Length: 120
Image (cartoon, rainbow, N blue to C red; front, side):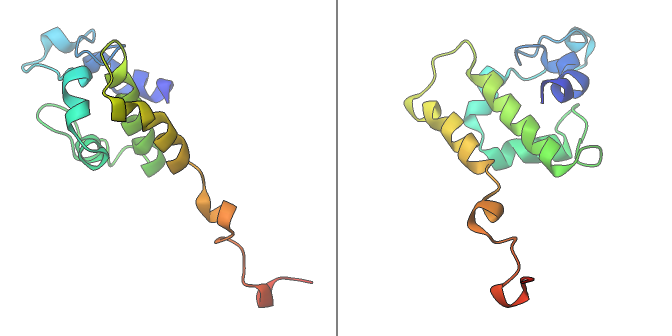
């Protein structure tokens, strides 16, 4: 996750997501600071921005697989929390992330063949 961020995002958004990456100053527009923007957006909105791009940010939908995009959503949310007062409800985000990343199909057996098709 960190490697993907370093390859695709760090140059503009910087190591802490503050919008102060090494090329940010040379860009024609300000780069958003995750501390200010991410907490005001839903996961769906963040995913859409990563996939489709916004402003001068390129669309990464064609270049990244869905799990990689989801990792980027998670990582931007993590960076948005560093160094700021976290709202009470945001403190539960790591639990939600952990829960949502569990392959529930396997846990609940959805990926198993029906009983009549199982080899004996």
